[in-house]
Structure formats: structure tokens, C-alpha cells
Length: 177
Length: 271
Image 1 (spheres, chains in turn green, cyan):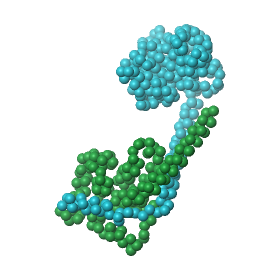
Image 2 (cartoon, chains in turn brown, yellow):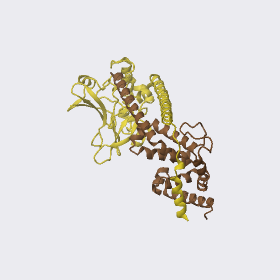
Image 3 (cartoon, helix red, strand yellow):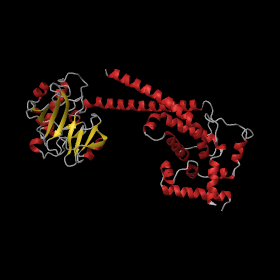
Image 4 (cartoon, helix red, strand yellow):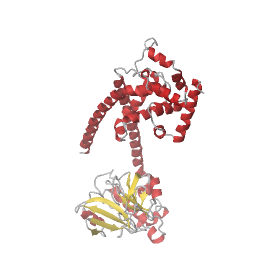
């Protein structure tokens, strides 16, 4: 009897998981372009952006049911996870990119090479990961200081100081001071 | 100047050149990776569970060989591993030894935590071993596993047998209730700030020293515990321990559904 019940509940879990996988696949399809763009802003290069997005989405997907159960907006959750992953555990691994399909030569993507040549973009890439994340969350995501503090799990004071250091570095590098 | 930089950052971050082309198989790659991670995690979890089960199994197999003290530890919960019939020879053996070990404190000790397993099973256990017949009123240790009646909340938590979080066990919120690792009921254990544990619930598979547990017939309870008194659908048997406590056998009129231990001097309305 118990065994029958266990089998039934296992079957229910299996059905629920299949549904969750379908749901997550749809989420990935819809959010991938935006996340890659956001990852590009965070990491400063499209290869790392692709790796970051894939790594975070894999983690989130493996716990999709519990992520949904938290009641947060899953997209906001993924973006927070990307910012934190980029800061804390991101190693600039150059493993084969499964997500991004990038041209090999600059000649194929002149827009990209022009972006690479922009002084502000170069200055941003020089910032430490956390300062860069604060700037991206502030100017890309348009988050307030309190929201940035919440997303990164740091205090508002730290957000202010990181932001101020980042802006000072950018000004210095751009020769604006 | 600052505004210039703000504007430049906003312009840069809204630039189309930040777009990254998505490959057609990007979603599949992510799904495969997520599935791989999930399977790896569940494999680790399963391995951990197996190791835990093996550890628990080894622990259980060690029990019978570790003398009276271990029997006292697990006390009223003689596990039905050896046979399905309640009055098995091994159960009766345990009954005799432990009853004897608990009796001594009543006449000659101060009664500090008499229900604590192990504390009463010292060298004195040999002397009364000759007085085998259990006399009414019965005396059994008020303990289930590592939890004992009268034990403070802090000590009870240290045993690792309580399942947090607790819930309030009376209207005033003084007393708290916990489920235990063996009894999922959220009111399995009730703890008073002044008296310590005032209620313990036996796991459904456990039996008292006299072989009564969930599923026992009401008539069997009365046979095993002649001093049992009826209170509504409950049968109550007061133990001759110090401090005094009572077995509360909840019944559906015919069979026992739950066995609880209740400290007589308790100040929690739910206990």
C-alpha cells in the first residue's frame, strides 16, 4: 500500500517536473536576448556574458520549481543572481560558448569593434566587478540605491561608496577631471 | 560634468551594440545543463541519504549489544524490529531490567531528573534485579529517545530530536510545541518555560515497556496497566516516578491511536 502511494506521488512529481521544464524552457526563450545584453553590460564582453547567462540559467533551471515558489519575479531573480555571480565566483573561463554565436573577425561585426573602441566602454571594463555591477544596476537597470543594495546583499552605504569610487575612476580615465 | 557622465552611461547601456546574438540551440543547451545539474544534485542527495541510512542501520544493530544503559535510552520505545507480535521475549527482558533501574530513585533519591535515561541506570541496577514482578502503580522512565519529561527547551534542542520551528502551545504564547524527528505532529512535544518538557508523544511504531502502542486494543491497555482510568476516549495511567507523570492513551474507543506522556505538574493548557 505504502509502495503504491509512493509510486503515485513519484508519478505526480514526474508530471509536475515535466511541466516545470516546459515552463522554464519558455522562460529561457523569452528572456535570453535581454539577459545576454545585460550580461554583456555586466561582464564587458559577449563571450563572458554568454557563459554567465548559461551558468546562472542552468542553476536556476535546476531549481526552477523552488525559484517559482519564492514568489519573486523570476527574471529579477536571475538578474540579481547574474550580478552576484559575476562579482563573487565569476572566473573568466573561456570555455566553448554554447549560447552566443559570435563572429570571429572584427570585420564581420564593425558595430562591435566600434563599441570596443569607445573610451567609456573601455573605462567600464577596467572597473572592479562590484563597482561595475553597481554602475550597471544603476544606469542599465535604473535601480535605486536601496534596490541595488538589496540585489547585491550589501548596505546602502557600500552602494554609495562603490558608486562614487566607480564614477571617480571613470572620470579620471576619461580625463573629465 | 557629472550629468554628462550619467547621460553617457545611459546612452552606452541603451546602445544596440550591446546586443548578443542568440544561437538557435541556446535554450536546449541551458535545459541540458540544468537537467545535468539537477541529476548530479539528486545523486549526491541520494548518496547522502544512503550513507545516513546505513549509519542509522549500524546504530540500530549496535543497540541490543550495548547493555542496560542503551535500553534505558530508548526506553519506552522498544522497536518492533525483531517481531510483529507485541509480547516478544526480547521486549519482556527489556521491561524487567528497566523497570528495576527506575524504581530505586523513588524511595531514596532526590528525584532530580529521574526520567533522564542513563542517570538511573548505575551500579544500583544489580540490587533490585531480584525484585522482578512489576508492582502497580507502574514506573517507567518518562523519556522517548533522547527527550525526557522535564528537560529544558535548550537541552531538548541540543539533542537534535526536535524539528524547528516551534509553534505556540497556549494562548499566552508561553509554552511552545515542536514536532520531533520521529513524530511529525507539530504538537508532539510541548515545552513549558518553567517545567521543561511537559508532553512527549511516542512514535507510532513504539511501544511502552508493557507492549502498548498505537494499534493496541483498549482491553490490552487495561490488562497491561490495571490502574488505567478512563477519561472520555482517553485512558490514563499514572506512573510512580518522580516527578509524577501520566501515560495518556488516546483511543478511538477500540484501539489506541496515540500514546503520550504528560507531566502531571504542567502549566501548559494544551499539554
